[in-house]
Image (tube, rainbow, N blue to C red; front, side, top):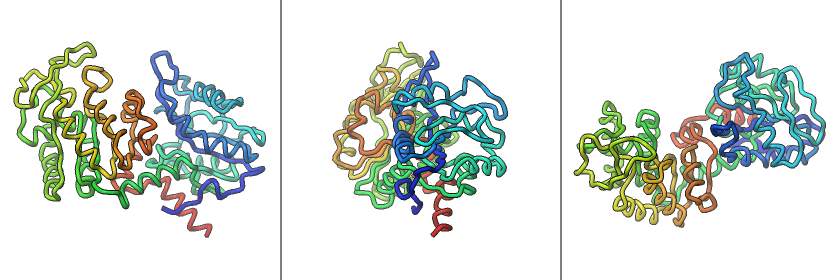
Length: 395
């Protein structure tokens, strides 16, 4: 993938618009509960400020109604935390589309771009106004690269000069390394509640990986495809044939899908529910499978140990509840101890990596969710595609 990068450009004295991904989660008290994405965005912002540019930072947060200001979707808490991390005041600008005042060597955070009419529709008029704000547009929001929005795609089309930020460049490099020419065996872990949300990526990975580990509700659907009783567990019975097709694809190439032989289950879904270890053939109709058991994890650990490349998206069980966290904990530990190249991505995956203290043991942690999966699937990401087109035009 060929595009200009931030370190190739001279930013001194220029107005620079940086599209970051500051879409962070908040706790019950409306305080930021995980600042991973903010910290990942700092290198591009610091580079632009230190280069003597007038820096405007643009991001979305959640899904507000366009055309109106909504305080619950305001980036104000992000501006406060960003100021603390940078050690300099970063004010927030509310009505910024028609112009922004910012001095050279300083930065301002633009209020939630999704509050603007036309943002998600990739409106040309809005995109041109965004482009008019700057001399250089920097796309450093890999997590939003799969969306053709005005702030990711349209603005890059019309900006005088545009490039990829360091986070985007690192993400693309890591994902390409994991898929284009991976060290073998290539092992992928895909967890989550539903096969339907990840069916296309499962079918695509089945053609590429040596072994595929599925977790959560996805694993339950695959167990149904193998004729197992899963009791009252979360699954998608109407997608059993699709799960069977993924299994057949992997096994026809000599690979494995190590479905659980032992599990941890409960009769109610509750953080205080008692976890009971059972073999799959012992599952009762009122049991819900909420985690993988230790014998299964021992087999999975062997696959991870032998892996040359590991791609991880999604937990194996309900890791938020400690009694059902054992499978994901052991998976995290196995990946951390592996000598293979490891790449993890997605919100739940980042939360698991953080919870089990293996952040510094994973070779690369992607800040993206949907974009991470679509890249793995081999899809073109609209925002990156536009950066490539602009790079070709300016050659």
